[in-house]
Length: 183
Image 1 (tube, rainbow, N blue to C red):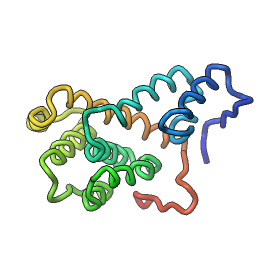
Image 2: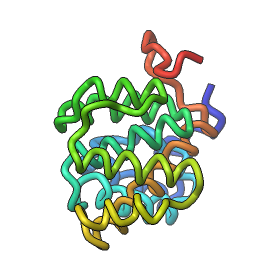
Image 3: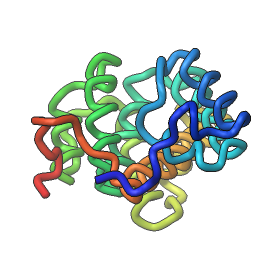
């Protein structure tokens, strides 16, 4: 059961309505995921939706790699709704199903491309230790450059905020959707 009060157009402040309308009119097409909770702080919701728009649609990473980073983040925080929302996007973006399944199971995926290995290693180390080894940093730098490393940090950070919000808000999976992590 969701923990935050559901805001309606009648109960929203003018600023909340403005931000809600802006989010709903964009590529997201509505207020789902963390946005109903974030709207309780409309300026934060607005700032995060702008950051999220870049992380999802504006970074230099193809969907296959950005969604791999998102799935790793969702698994780390057991963010069920985040996994539910992004697993199909990862597959549509070209991530092989067996890679996504290995991430879901917490196992190192086999037979990844070099760029997938770099993203996987960087993101799993980052989420495990709050830092990455020199080897993971240099491998990512060789493939993506320093701008790419910054973007990868941004993707992991933004989707950590998303996943934690979804968990704390108790955003439910749609009726009949199995728990991806078996809890």
